[in-house]
Length: 260
Length: 251
Image (cartoon, rainbow over all chains, first blue to last red; front, top):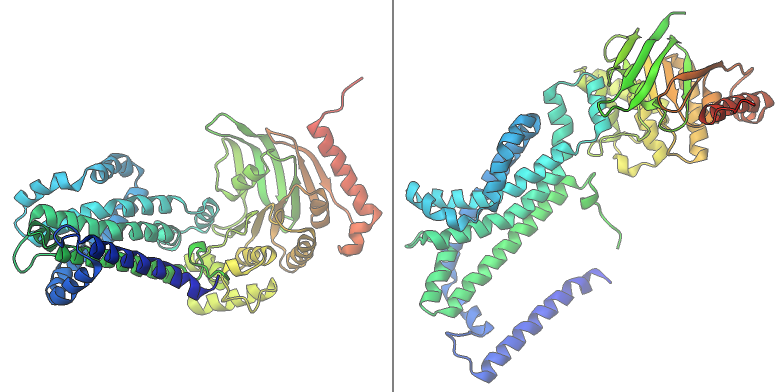
Protein backbone atom coordinates (compact mmCIF):
# COMPACT_ATOMS: atom_id res chain seq x y z
CA UNK A 1 0.00 0.00 0.00
CA UNK A 2 1.43 3.38 -0.92
CA UNK A 3 1.80 6.41 1.32
CA UNK A 4 -1.13 8.37 -0.10
CA UNK A 5 -3.59 5.53 0.43
CA UNK A 6 -2.40 5.12 4.02
CA UNK A 7 -3.13 8.79 4.70
CA UNK A 8 -6.44 8.87 2.82
CA UNK A 9 -8.15 5.82 4.38
CA UNK A 10 -8.45 7.15 7.96
CA UNK A 11 -9.46 10.58 6.61
CA UNK A 12 -12.22 9.02 4.47
CA UNK A 13 -13.48 7.05 7.46
CA UNK A 14 -13.62 10.23 9.56
CA UNK A 15 -15.49 12.18 6.89
CA UNK A 16 -18.00 9.32 6.43
CA UNK A 17 -18.62 9.22 10.18
CA UNK A 18 -19.20 12.98 10.37
CA UNK A 19 -21.58 12.86 7.39
CA UNK A 20 -23.58 10.05 8.99
CA UNK A 21 -23.77 12.05 12.24
CA UNK A 22 -24.92 15.19 10.40
CA UNK A 23 -27.58 13.30 8.43
CA UNK A 24 -28.91 11.41 11.48
CA UNK A 25 -29.21 14.58 13.55
CA UNK A 26 -31.07 16.40 10.75
CA UNK A 27 -33.34 13.52 9.80
CA UNK A 28 -34.33 12.67 13.38
CA UNK A 29 -34.49 16.34 14.39
CA UNK A 30 -32.38 15.89 17.54
CA UNK A 31 -32.43 19.12 19.58
CA UNK A 32 -29.13 21.02 19.72
CA UNK A 33 -28.95 20.82 23.57
CA UNK A 34 -28.91 16.98 23.34
CA UNK A 35 -26.64 16.41 20.36
CA UNK A 36 -25.53 19.19 18.01
CA UNK A 37 -24.62 18.29 14.44
CA UNK A 38 -20.98 18.57 13.30
CA UNK A 39 -21.92 21.72 11.38
CA UNK A 40 -23.13 23.31 14.65
CA UNK A 41 -19.86 22.40 16.37
CA UNK A 42 -17.91 23.86 13.47
CA UNK A 43 -20.04 26.99 13.80
CA UNK A 44 -19.23 27.24 17.51
CA UNK A 45 -15.52 26.80 16.72
CA UNK A 46 -15.74 29.58 14.13
CA UNK A 47 -17.72 32.04 16.26
CA UNK A 48 -16.01 31.47 19.62
CA UNK A 49 -12.63 30.58 18.13
CA UNK A 50 -10.72 33.57 19.51
CA UNK A 51 -12.13 33.16 22.99
CA UNK A 52 -11.51 29.42 23.04
CA UNK A 53 -7.95 29.80 21.73
CA UNK A 54 -7.13 32.04 24.71
CA UNK A 55 -8.48 29.33 27.03
CA UNK A 56 -6.52 26.76 25.06
CA UNK A 57 -3.29 28.69 25.57
CA UNK A 58 -3.91 28.66 29.34
CA UNK A 59 -4.38 24.88 29.35
CA UNK A 60 -1.43 24.35 27.04
CA UNK A 61 0.80 26.51 29.23
CA UNK A 62 0.08 24.37 32.31
CA UNK A 63 0.41 21.13 30.35
CA UNK A 64 3.79 21.97 28.83
CA UNK A 65 5.16 23.39 32.09
CA UNK A 66 4.09 20.22 33.91
CA UNK A 67 5.57 18.01 31.21
CA UNK A 68 8.93 19.79 31.25
CA UNK A 69 8.97 19.73 35.05
CA UNK A 70 8.09 16.01 35.03
CA UNK A 71 10.83 15.27 32.47
CA UNK A 72 13.50 17.07 34.47
CA UNK A 73 12.50 15.86 37.93
CA UNK A 74 11.61 12.35 36.69
CA UNK A 75 14.96 11.86 34.98
CA UNK A 76 16.78 13.32 37.99
CA UNK A 77 14.94 11.10 40.46
CA UNK A 78 15.57 8.00 38.31
CA UNK A 79 19.26 8.83 38.08
CA UNK A 80 19.51 9.23 41.85
CA UNK A 81 17.59 6.01 42.49
CA UNK A 82 19.80 4.09 40.05
CA UNK A 83 22.99 5.35 41.69
CA UNK A 84 21.98 4.43 45.23
CA UNK A 85 20.11 1.12 45.47
CA UNK A 86 19.23 1.94 49.08
CA UNK A 87 17.50 5.11 47.89
CA UNK A 88 15.51 3.07 45.38
CA UNK A 89 14.33 0.70 48.10
CA UNK A 90 13.39 3.60 50.33
CA UNK A 91 11.68 5.93 47.89
CA UNK A 92 10.36 3.90 44.97
CA UNK A 93 7.24 2.69 46.85
CA UNK A 94 6.29 6.35 47.30
CA UNK A 95 6.65 6.94 43.57
CA UNK A 96 4.25 4.05 43.04
CA UNK A 97 1.93 5.58 45.63
CA UNK A 98 2.02 8.81 43.61
CA UNK A 99 1.02 6.87 40.52
CA UNK A 100 -1.81 4.75 41.89
CA UNK A 101 -3.50 7.56 43.83
CA UNK A 102 -6.19 9.14 41.63
CA UNK A 103 -5.23 12.79 41.45
CA UNK A 104 -8.86 13.87 41.79
CA UNK A 105 -8.70 12.77 45.43
CA UNK A 106 -5.58 14.82 46.13
CA UNK A 107 -6.84 17.95 44.39
CA UNK A 108 -9.01 19.35 47.24
CA UNK A 109 -6.03 19.32 49.62
CA UNK A 110 -3.68 20.98 47.16
CA UNK A 111 -6.30 23.65 46.51
CA UNK A 112 -6.49 24.39 50.25
CA UNK A 113 -2.72 24.42 50.78
CA UNK A 114 -1.69 26.39 47.70
CA UNK A 115 -3.07 29.83 46.83
CA UNK A 116 -1.84 30.30 43.29
CA UNK A 117 -4.17 28.53 40.82
CA UNK A 118 -1.43 28.06 38.24
CA UNK A 119 0.73 26.30 40.83
CA UNK A 120 -2.19 24.09 41.92
CA UNK A 121 -2.77 22.98 38.34
CA UNK A 122 0.96 22.52 37.80
CA UNK A 123 1.33 20.28 40.86
CA UNK A 124 -1.63 18.09 39.91
CA UNK A 125 -0.57 17.73 36.26
CA UNK A 126 2.99 16.97 37.38
CA UNK A 127 1.71 14.26 39.71
CA UNK A 128 -0.15 12.65 36.83
CA UNK A 129 2.82 12.82 34.47
CA UNK A 130 5.96 12.07 36.43
CA UNK A 131 5.71 8.36 37.19
CA UNK A 132 6.14 6.87 33.68
CA UNK A 133 9.27 8.95 33.29
CA UNK A 134 10.74 7.78 36.59
CA UNK A 135 9.97 4.11 36.05
CA UNK A 136 10.96 4.00 32.37
CA UNK A 137 14.20 5.91 32.88
CA UNK A 138 15.09 3.71 35.87
CA UNK A 139 14.53 0.62 33.74
CA UNK A 140 16.73 2.11 31.01
CA UNK A 141 19.53 2.97 33.42
CA UNK A 142 19.51 -0.61 34.65
CA UNK A 143 19.45 -2.06 31.14
CA UNK A 144 22.93 -0.89 30.16
CA UNK A 145 24.92 -3.72 28.56
CA UNK A 146 26.86 -5.62 31.26
CA UNK A 147 29.83 -6.21 28.98
CA UNK A 148 30.04 -2.50 28.26
CA UNK A 149 29.92 -1.85 32.01
CA UNK A 150 32.82 -4.27 32.44
CA UNK A 151 34.71 -2.48 29.69
CA UNK A 152 34.22 0.88 31.42
CA UNK A 153 35.54 -0.66 34.65
CA UNK A 154 38.51 -2.19 32.87
CA UNK A 155 39.50 1.18 31.43
CA UNK A 156 39.16 2.87 34.81
CA UNK A 157 36.12 5.05 34.02
CA UNK A 158 34.99 7.36 36.83
CA UNK A 159 31.40 7.25 38.05
CA UNK A 160 30.65 10.48 36.18
CA UNK A 161 32.10 9.07 32.95
CA UNK A 162 30.08 5.90 33.29
CA UNK A 163 26.88 7.86 33.89
CA UNK A 164 27.45 10.32 31.06
CA UNK A 165 28.87 8.00 28.43
CA UNK A 166 27.11 4.73 29.16
CA UNK A 167 24.06 4.94 31.45
CA UNK A 168 22.44 8.09 30.06
CA UNK A 169 22.65 7.06 26.38
CA UNK A 170 21.42 3.55 27.29
CA UNK A 171 18.43 5.02 29.12
CA UNK A 172 17.56 7.63 26.47
CA UNK A 173 15.14 5.47 24.40
CA UNK A 174 13.35 4.38 27.60
CA UNK A 175 13.16 7.98 28.86
CA UNK A 176 11.67 9.09 25.54
CA UNK A 177 9.13 6.25 25.69
CA UNK A 178 8.11 7.48 29.13
CA UNK A 179 7.94 11.05 27.88
CA UNK A 180 5.47 10.11 25.15
CA UNK A 181 3.16 8.52 27.72
CA UNK A 182 3.58 11.48 30.05
CA UNK A 183 2.67 13.99 27.33
CA UNK A 184 -0.86 12.58 27.27
CA UNK A 185 -0.99 12.23 31.05
CA UNK A 186 0.09 15.84 31.60
CA UNK A 187 -2.87 16.99 29.50
CA UNK A 188 -5.26 14.67 31.33
CA UNK A 189 -3.85 15.90 34.65
CA UNK A 190 -4.34 19.53 33.64
CA UNK A 191 -7.91 18.93 32.44
CA UNK A 192 -8.90 17.05 35.61
CA UNK A 193 -7.25 19.70 37.76
CA UNK A 194 -9.07 22.51 35.94
CA UNK A 195 -12.40 20.76 36.38
CA UNK A 196 -11.84 20.08 40.08
CA UNK A 197 -10.25 23.41 40.90
CA UNK A 198 -13.16 25.09 39.15
CA UNK A 199 -11.12 27.98 37.85
CA UNK A 200 -13.16 30.79 36.43
CA UNK A 201 -12.78 34.24 34.94
CA UNK A 202 -10.64 35.33 32.05
CA UNK A 203 -7.65 33.13 32.97
CA UNK A 204 -9.59 29.89 32.95
CA UNK A 205 -8.53 27.00 30.76
CA UNK A 206 -10.34 25.04 28.09
CA UNK A 207 -11.56 22.32 30.45
CA UNK A 208 -13.30 24.86 32.69
CA UNK A 209 -14.89 26.36 29.58
CA UNK A 210 -16.10 22.91 28.55
CA UNK A 211 -17.68 22.35 31.97
CA UNK A 212 -19.18 25.85 31.99
CA UNK A 213 -20.71 25.38 28.53
CA UNK A 214 -22.18 21.99 29.40
CA UNK A 215 -23.83 23.43 32.56
CA UNK A 216 -25.51 26.00 30.31
CA UNK A 217 -26.48 23.24 27.85
CA UNK A 218 -24.40 24.98 25.15
CA UNK A 219 -23.41 21.61 23.83
CA UNK A 220 -21.99 22.83 20.52
CA UNK A 221 -19.53 25.04 22.43
CA UNK A 222 -18.70 22.25 24.89
CA UNK A 223 -18.00 19.88 22.01
CA UNK A 224 -15.88 22.53 20.32
CA UNK A 225 -13.76 22.61 23.49
CA UNK A 226 -13.59 18.84 23.37
CA UNK A 227 -12.42 18.90 19.75
CA UNK A 228 -9.69 21.41 20.58
CA UNK A 229 -8.50 19.38 23.60
CA UNK A 230 -8.30 16.21 21.51
CA UNK A 231 -6.40 18.07 18.81
CA UNK A 232 -3.93 19.33 21.43
CA UNK A 233 -3.45 15.81 22.84
CA UNK A 234 -2.81 14.51 19.38
CA UNK A 235 -0.38 17.33 18.58
CA UNK A 236 1.57 16.75 21.80
CA UNK A 237 1.92 13.06 21.00
CA UNK A 238 2.96 13.73 17.41
CA UNK A 239 5.53 16.33 18.50
CA UNK A 240 7.05 14.02 21.12
CA UNK A 241 7.10 11.13 18.66
CA UNK A 242 8.94 13.28 16.11
CA UNK A 243 11.34 14.56 18.77
CA UNK A 244 12.09 11.01 19.91
CA UNK A 245 12.65 9.75 16.36
CA UNK A 246 14.98 12.65 15.58
CA UNK A 247 17.09 12.00 18.67
CA UNK A 248 17.35 8.27 18.04
CA UNK A 249 17.36 8.16 14.26
CA UNK A 250 21.02 7.22 13.94
CA UNK A 251 21.03 4.17 16.10
CA UNK A 252 17.88 2.93 17.76
CA UNK A 253 15.66 0.22 16.27
CA UNK A 254 12.50 2.20 17.07
CA UNK A 255 13.55 5.13 14.88
CA UNK A 256 15.10 3.31 11.95
CA UNK A 257 13.78 3.99 8.47
CA UNK A 258 11.97 1.00 7.08
CA UNK A 259 11.56 0.40 3.37
CA UNK A 260 7.90 -0.28 2.86
CA UNK B 1 61.16 -14.37 28.82
CA UNK B 2 59.30 -12.80 31.70
CA UNK B 3 55.86 -13.85 32.89
CA UNK B 4 52.89 -11.69 31.90
CA UNK B 5 50.36 -13.49 34.08
CA UNK B 6 50.97 -15.84 37.00
CA UNK B 7 48.02 -17.79 38.36
CA UNK B 8 48.59 -19.38 41.74
CA UNK B 9 45.95 -21.80 43.06
CA UNK B 10 43.25 -19.60 41.58
CA UNK B 11 39.78 -20.86 42.46
CA UNK B 12 36.37 -19.27 42.11
CA UNK B 13 33.15 -20.21 43.85
CA UNK B 14 30.12 -18.04 43.17
CA UNK B 15 27.83 -16.74 45.90
CA UNK B 16 25.26 -19.27 44.69
CA UNK B 17 27.64 -22.04 45.80
CA UNK B 18 28.56 -23.07 42.25
CA UNK B 19 32.26 -23.83 42.01
CA UNK B 20 33.38 -22.48 38.64
CA UNK B 21 37.13 -22.93 38.95
CA UNK B 22 38.97 -25.60 40.91
CA UNK B 23 42.26 -24.15 42.18
CA UNK B 24 44.53 -23.92 39.15
CA UNK B 25 48.02 -22.64 38.56
CA UNK B 26 49.70 -21.56 35.37
CA UNK B 27 52.17 -19.04 34.01
CA UNK B 28 51.64 -17.13 30.78
CA UNK B 29 54.79 -15.80 29.15
CA UNK B 30 54.96 -12.19 28.01
CA UNK B 31 54.35 -11.82 24.30
CA UNK B 32 52.95 -15.31 23.91
CA UNK B 33 49.71 -16.46 22.29
CA UNK B 34 47.83 -18.93 24.46
CA UNK B 35 44.49 -20.55 23.64
CA UNK B 36 42.19 -22.04 26.25
CA UNK B 37 39.77 -24.74 25.12
CA UNK B 38 37.26 -26.67 27.17
CA UNK B 39 33.68 -27.94 27.18
CA UNK B 40 31.02 -25.26 27.47
CA UNK B 41 30.33 -24.13 31.01
CA UNK B 42 33.78 -25.20 32.21
CA UNK B 43 34.71 -21.80 33.60
CA UNK B 44 36.81 -20.52 30.67
CA UNK B 45 35.08 -17.16 30.66
CA UNK B 46 35.25 -16.95 34.45
CA UNK B 47 38.98 -17.57 34.29
CA UNK B 48 39.37 -14.79 31.73
CA UNK B 49 37.36 -12.37 33.87
CA UNK B 50 39.51 -13.27 36.87
CA UNK B 51 42.68 -12.64 34.86
CA UNK B 52 41.26 -9.28 33.71
CA UNK B 53 40.55 -8.29 37.30
CA UNK B 54 36.81 -7.98 36.58
CA UNK B 55 36.07 -10.75 39.05
CA UNK B 56 38.02 -11.54 42.24
CA UNK B 57 39.19 -15.12 42.80
CA UNK B 58 37.88 -16.76 45.99
CA UNK B 59 41.19 -18.52 46.55
CA UNK B 60 44.72 -17.98 45.32
CA UNK B 61 46.41 -15.06 43.63
CA UNK B 62 46.64 -13.49 40.19
CA UNK B 63 49.77 -11.55 39.32
CA UNK B 64 49.71 -9.39 36.24
CA UNK B 65 52.79 -7.72 34.83
CA UNK B 66 50.79 -4.95 33.23
CA UNK B 67 50.24 -1.38 34.40
CA UNK B 68 46.60 -0.40 35.10
CA UNK B 69 44.38 0.00 32.02
CA UNK B 70 46.87 -1.78 29.75
CA UNK B 71 44.63 -4.82 29.61
CA UNK B 72 42.09 -5.09 26.79
CA UNK B 73 39.14 -7.43 26.57
CA UNK B 74 37.25 -8.62 23.50
CA UNK B 75 33.87 -10.24 24.11
CA UNK B 76 32.01 -12.80 22.02
CA UNK B 77 29.58 -10.05 21.15
CA UNK B 78 31.25 -7.01 19.57
CA UNK B 79 29.89 -4.94 22.50
CA UNK B 80 29.88 -1.62 20.67
CA UNK B 81 27.89 1.37 21.87
CA UNK B 82 25.02 1.53 19.32
CA UNK B 83 24.62 5.29 19.75
CA UNK B 84 28.23 6.07 18.83
CA UNK B 85 30.03 5.97 15.49
CA UNK B 86 32.73 3.39 14.83
CA UNK B 87 35.39 6.04 15.45
CA UNK B 88 33.81 7.09 18.76
CA UNK B 89 33.59 3.46 19.83
CA UNK B 90 37.23 2.83 19.06
CA UNK B 91 38.18 6.08 20.79
CA UNK B 92 36.41 5.10 24.02
CA UNK B 93 39.42 3.81 26.03
CA UNK B 94 41.44 6.91 25.11
CA UNK B 95 38.53 9.27 25.93
CA UNK B 96 38.08 7.63 29.33
CA UNK B 97 41.79 8.10 29.95
CA UNK B 98 41.45 11.78 29.03
CA UNK B 99 43.93 11.75 26.14
CA UNK B 100 44.15 14.91 23.98
CA UNK B 101 41.91 15.07 20.89
CA UNK B 102 44.75 15.17 18.35
CA UNK B 103 46.31 12.02 19.75
CA UNK B 104 42.92 10.27 19.83
CA UNK B 105 42.19 11.10 16.19
CA UNK B 106 45.60 9.88 15.10
CA UNK B 107 45.51 6.61 17.02
CA UNK B 108 41.90 5.81 16.09
CA UNK B 109 42.64 6.39 12.40
CA UNK B 110 45.66 4.11 12.63
CA UNK B 111 43.79 1.37 14.51
CA UNK B 112 40.93 1.44 12.00
CA UNK B 113 43.36 1.18 9.11
CA UNK B 114 45.06 -1.80 10.71
CA UNK B 115 41.85 -3.79 11.03
CA UNK B 116 40.76 -2.81 7.52
CA UNK B 117 37.97 -0.44 8.52
CA UNK B 118 39.28 2.79 7.00
CA UNK B 119 36.35 4.55 5.43
CA UNK B 120 33.92 3.35 8.11
CA UNK B 121 34.90 5.79 10.87
CA UNK B 122 31.60 7.67 10.61
CA UNK B 123 29.36 4.59 10.30
CA UNK B 124 27.13 3.39 13.11
CA UNK B 125 27.44 -0.20 14.37
CA UNK B 126 24.06 -1.28 12.97
CA UNK B 127 25.32 -0.42 9.48
CA UNK B 128 28.16 -2.95 9.75
CA UNK B 129 28.21 -6.72 9.20
CA UNK B 130 29.03 -9.07 12.07
CA UNK B 131 32.63 -9.45 10.93
CA UNK B 132 33.10 -5.70 10.59
CA UNK B 133 31.66 -5.10 14.07
CA UNK B 134 34.18 -7.58 15.46
CA UNK B 135 36.95 -5.75 13.60
CA UNK B 136 35.84 -2.50 15.26
CA UNK B 137 35.87 -4.29 18.61
CA UNK B 138 39.44 -5.47 17.98
CA UNK B 139 40.46 -1.96 16.90
CA UNK B 140 39.09 -0.63 20.20
CA UNK B 141 41.06 -3.29 22.09
CA UNK B 142 44.34 -2.43 20.38
CA UNK B 143 44.02 1.36 20.27
CA UNK B 144 45.56 1.68 23.75
CA UNK B 145 48.58 -0.38 22.78
CA UNK B 146 47.72 -3.01 25.40
CA UNK B 147 50.22 -5.35 27.01
CA UNK B 148 47.62 -8.02 27.67
CA UNK B 149 44.81 -8.88 25.27
CA UNK B 150 42.06 -11.16 26.58
CA UNK B 151 39.62 -12.59 24.06
CA UNK B 152 36.50 -14.51 25.05
CA UNK B 153 35.30 -16.55 22.05
CA UNK B 154 35.43 -13.43 19.88
CA UNK B 155 34.68 -15.15 16.58
CA UNK B 156 32.18 -17.76 17.78
CA UNK B 157 29.17 -15.98 16.31
CA UNK B 158 30.71 -15.46 12.85
CA UNK B 159 30.42 -17.60 9.76
CA UNK B 160 33.29 -19.96 8.87
CA UNK B 161 34.72 -17.82 6.07
CA UNK B 162 34.75 -14.57 8.06
CA UNK B 163 36.18 -16.43 11.01
CA UNK B 164 39.13 -17.81 9.01
CA UNK B 165 39.85 -14.36 7.61
CA UNK B 166 39.77 -12.77 11.05
CA UNK B 167 42.03 -15.53 12.41
CA UNK B 168 44.60 -14.71 9.72
CA UNK B 169 44.35 -10.99 10.41
CA UNK B 170 44.55 -11.42 14.18
CA UNK B 171 47.69 -13.53 13.79
CA UNK B 172 49.29 -10.90 11.57
CA UNK B 173 48.45 -8.15 14.07
CA UNK B 174 49.85 -10.20 16.93
CA UNK B 175 53.07 -10.80 15.03
CA UNK B 176 53.45 -7.04 14.52
CA UNK B 177 52.59 -6.03 18.07
CA UNK B 178 53.48 -8.99 20.26
CA UNK B 179 50.82 -8.41 22.89
CA UNK B 180 50.36 -11.25 25.34
CA UNK B 181 47.16 -12.87 24.05
CA UNK B 182 44.91 -15.26 25.95
CA UNK B 183 42.25 -16.54 23.59
CA UNK B 184 39.29 -18.58 24.84
CA UNK B 185 37.50 -20.65 22.22
CA UNK B 186 35.52 -23.86 21.88
CA UNK B 187 36.92 -24.49 18.42
CA UNK B 188 39.94 -26.79 18.62
CA UNK B 189 41.00 -25.92 15.07
CA UNK B 190 40.93 -22.23 15.85
CA UNK B 191 42.92 -22.77 19.06
CA UNK B 192 45.62 -24.79 17.33
CA UNK B 193 45.80 -22.50 14.32
CA UNK B 194 46.34 -19.36 16.37
CA UNK B 195 48.27 -20.32 19.46
CA UNK B 196 51.74 -21.31 20.47
CA UNK B 197 50.29 -23.08 23.43
CA UNK B 198 46.90 -24.62 24.20
CA UNK B 199 45.51 -25.14 27.67
CA UNK B 200 42.77 -27.77 27.88
CA UNK B 201 40.25 -27.38 30.69
CA UNK B 202 38.08 -29.99 32.37
CA UNK B 203 34.31 -29.71 32.82
CA UNK B 204 33.18 -27.63 35.81
CA UNK B 205 34.82 -27.00 38.20
CA UNK B 206 37.42 -26.04 35.62
CA UNK B 207 41.06 -26.94 35.99
CA UNK B 208 43.85 -27.30 33.45
CA UNK B 209 44.11 -30.96 32.45
CA UNK B 210 46.60 -30.56 29.62
CA UNK B 211 49.11 -27.95 28.54
CA UNK B 212 50.28 -28.48 24.95
CA UNK B 213 52.94 -26.51 23.09
CA UNK B 214 51.93 -26.17 19.45
CA UNK B 215 54.89 -26.59 17.15
CA UNK B 216 53.92 -25.96 13.59
CA UNK B 217 56.71 -25.30 11.12
CA UNK B 218 56.31 -22.57 8.54
CA UNK B 219 53.80 -19.84 7.93
CA UNK B 220 50.33 -20.26 9.39
CA UNK B 221 48.05 -20.02 6.38
CA UNK B 222 45.36 -21.94 4.52
CA UNK B 223 47.83 -24.64 3.47
CA UNK B 224 48.62 -25.27 7.10
CA UNK B 225 44.95 -25.83 7.90
CA UNK B 226 45.10 -28.87 5.62
CA UNK B 227 48.50 -30.23 6.70
CA UNK B 228 49.03 -33.47 8.63
CA UNK B 229 50.94 -31.75 11.42
CA UNK B 230 47.96 -29.44 12.00
CA UNK B 231 45.28 -32.13 11.96
CA UNK B 232 47.43 -34.36 14.23
CA UNK B 233 47.63 -31.59 16.83
CA UNK B 234 43.88 -31.05 16.58
CA UNK B 235 43.19 -34.77 16.96
CA UNK B 236 45.44 -34.93 20.02
CA UNK B 237 43.56 -32.11 21.77
CA UNK B 238 40.22 -33.44 20.64
CA UNK B 239 41.08 -36.79 22.31
CA UNK B 240 42.10 -35.02 25.53
CA UNK B 241 38.81 -33.13 25.61
CA UNK B 242 36.75 -36.22 24.94
CA UNK B 243 38.52 -38.01 27.79
CA UNK B 244 37.88 -35.07 30.08
CA UNK B 245 34.18 -35.14 29.35
CA UNK B 246 33.89 -38.92 29.57
CA UNK B 247 36.86 -40.45 31.45
CA UNK B 248 38.06 -43.80 29.97
CA UNK B 249 36.76 -46.75 32.00
CA UNK B 250 39.52 -48.89 33.53
CA UNK B 251 39.12 -52.57 32.68
